[in-house]
Image (cartoon, rainbow, N blue to C red; front, side, top):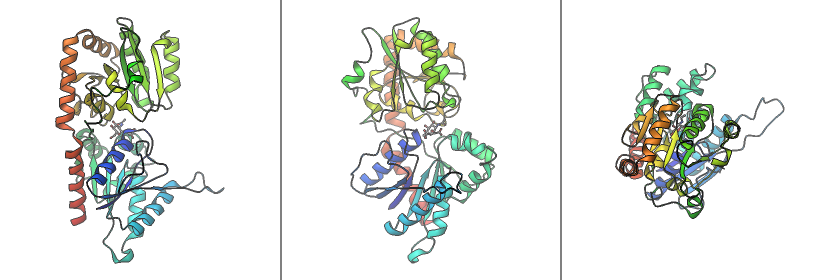
Length: 377
Ligand code: GMT
């Protein structure tokens, strides 16, 4: 197959999943064309059968902002025509699904070829936050309805989409996946191993530092833990609430126990050096980083909300508490960190679950089956 993939090229989970999917498809013999405004953060080129097409949205004094949606649609149609694409698989509904539908309409019938198809994968805030803004809800719903196939990364996200958007069409749940050969318990780099001082445990949080991640809770949980045992907090990623995190650590007097690493492409070299991942978000549709941590044998303490319980089983791969229950999360985390045998058991269960339930091969095959059904439909 010849597949166009569009995603946000940043460090977020939707871009990571789209990139890993594209790489895996190319390894299976498909031809993959990434179409975005920058090279996806985890896409290392050159690679056989993988191409990248940069979208540039020129500015003009009359435009409020450069119309990226239109430039993207134009580029999609152009690539579809030149590379003879079978379908466009877009990750994150807005504006990618809209651009893809426009591209499909533009491409229709060009060269007498078959109609270009559009597969849309819903990832999270495209549905739970952005898509529900009244300014965007009708067009998000239209994008979902007009796509040839739609997938969601968890049952939670599918249910929210059906409930909040009132869509009746089929939405298939295809969970995210992890490459367990790359994410492994013995994969820590010397750099990562040297981050903890003698006797300290490393606790990690990875995110885009947006309000939905509840960065204040990450710091509050860590503060409670570090008062009881020697610990250090690694913060990976960047975003609007990073300065809040820096301020909270400094006001709390534990600045020297926090390390801000910023955006890191190779998180698989850091995660295995840590003992606990904190993910106390308001809601994660899936929580890809939790799965990545689990593949590295790292248990998770986070919120019993959204799709996270579909990835982390409370009491088996970590502990999930009500959103905002920082005392409960700290107690659960301490319980694990203080009991070496319990931690070992959880760690082994984490790895087992990643290998058994979220392997790349199985879930990439699910996407391929959706492509095939869409193309023959
Ligand atoms: O939706 C977002 O806020 C961004 C998106 C991303 O690009 O990181 O995250 C979502 O998609 C990920 C990949 O499917 C999921 O693992 C994250 O849970 C989800 N984020 C939220 O639901 C907050």
